[in-house]
Image (tube, rainbow over all chains, first blue to last red):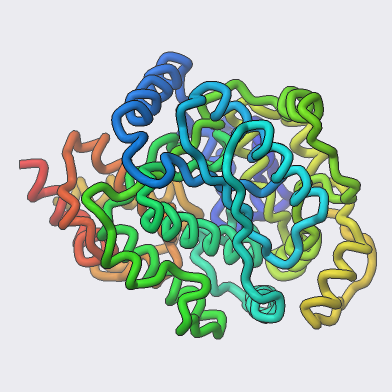
Length: 343
Length: 81
């Protein structure tokens, strides 16, 4: 049967678990999609403001911010501090061993402009390379929910960031953790993290690591149990304000470039900060046969943040062969088909 | 009970990448069978609270109550009374 592509977004019938209704031409995500109305967005923003006013000023920081140095997180940090200047914010940049020099310079610059403290979270490169190699070599070891939302490598990386940011929030007694996810990436603007759930998610990630052959006895990647034991009365909440603001890639870029953010010279349309991303996409395509950004881009198209035409074009763009080769060399992985990848 | 279970199953099929024809036993682990990860669980919890107009006490957010269709169905039945 020939491939059917959803008429509204970019998901297609070749992706396992995706069903296209032949009558309507829509995928099952689009058929049941209910966008957040502007009234609901306003209500969420009011709630976030109330939460900020109620819980800020109690710990060492009010917000632990996940800063990659890429365009979305740089813009979100700038706007967050512009809209809520009273928030004492610690921006954490995870050095996964592949962040570009541009990302570090941009992250520090945006912190300086926004008046935030900057902290670079580092783990020994050798340890990270080994971890990413195991993720790249694993097959079908991640839950479908995760596997279809990002590459195995990105899932590992983002999980470490989440675990370590929650850990940092507990240590600093910060009531909020802010991520720069768009509406396409996360539909929930406010996520409360009860301490039971923090423990459970830690254990789930520990098991996930074990599945790919990593035993994190030193708790380098997962939240330290000792920290969870000392969680205070109020567990942190995760906030996604970017999904409530009007979003367009052009507007975001225009704003931050004016502030002095430098567009990186990376030949990778999907990431402006990570030099491992092209390899992660290549690896996912090789293993599973579809682009790991498909679901992410489908979400942006579905929510109207990106045109369908642009979304389809983005998925057709070539991955950077030099970046793939460089990452493969660092991870000590042989590339089977050293040619340009096209969908 | 059966209606709640089918509702949760529909949610999983509509909101995750669980194959339509896939069957799971009532006691199967949703996380260990690769159906949900921690983010998926949070979204499911959010859906349950809204769909059934219930608040879930923190001490009930456990794998026993949320990692299987049976656990979820029992929990909703108890809290929605």
